[in-house]
Structure formats: C-alpha cells, structure tokens
Length: 221
Image (cartoon, rainbow, N blue to C red):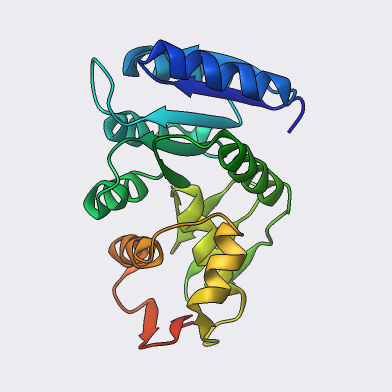
C-alpha cells in the first residue's frame, strides 16, 4: 500500500485522526475531510486511490457524496469504502448501489480495515482484458463500456462483474466464484451480487444476464 493516496472522510475527529495515523504508518499519503463538500473538492484535486467515507456527515450524507464522486471520470479508478454505524441491509444496499466497493459497519476494527484496503488495492493492480460481445465492448484501460458504439462509464465493481461474465459468454459463473474473482476475500453481504446484477440489467437490458437459480449467473452473448 506504500505510496498510495487515501482520503478519509468523517466528522468525528477522534475517528478521523485514528484512521489517519494508522494508514500513514502503512506508508499511504493521507488526506482528510470532515464534511461532504470538502470530501468532493479534495477528491477532485488529489485523485486518491482510496476513499474511506462516513455515511453520516454534517452537510449531506455519504451516499450522495459517493454518487457525485462516481460521476467524475477522473475518479473512476478510485476505491470507495463506506464506514457507518448503520448496519441495516437497506443501508448497505444503498451504499453498493451508489457505487461503493465495500461497506464496513462501525465500530471499526483497524486491522481488518487495513486488510480490506490492501486486498482491494492488490486486485486493482491485476489488469483486465478488453472484451467484446453482443454489441457490448469493454475497454479495460479506460474502464469504459461501449454499447452499439456509445461509450459509458459505470462503477468499478459493475465493470469488473460484467468483464468477468463476458469473459466466457454462456458460462454459468457460480456465486462463490463471482465473489472470489470480483471482491476477493473481502466480506460482503449476500445481496451485493444481486444489486450489481440489477444495475447492469438496468443499464444494458434485462436479457443481457441470465439467472441460474441456486447456482449463479451467465452472460447471454
């Protein structure tokens, strides 16, 4: 993780300083923000590799901040991890729908958090391949999708999931295989895959991905 940039966003000063101290020890260059507006401004300026984002902020909520950040092409490769005291399923689903790479429920276990960040950064270092099928083309370098020649940018995890399914059209990818290849050993809720599949269908058509009940999913190329 040494040399990477991390932006920590939290309005609780003790948590902000604790996280900043621990990640600085790992060799990361640390930036801090205690509200949503400052988080967006700082992210656009420094383009961090990772953002740790609290859901409850004084001027707005982290979900809105995440949605705003995900609309910025310059931050498409930035990892966003939510930190929140709210552990309800609907809160976590909202976080993933906004484009988060992970959702971590407080209280924070710093050793686990650092491991999650390392795993996600390591996975980013593995290059994806260009893929084209059924009028959809994936540009791995630009992290973009072209549908019938029209380019669009989608959240990174949606991109990685679609890339995996398109890598072998008509192959049924098991849920555990998808979890391992897209999220690694980072723990995520059971509904995370379903949320990302739904978002891909909304963008590219309901018939693009077929559900094999009790097994997994396949790309209908």
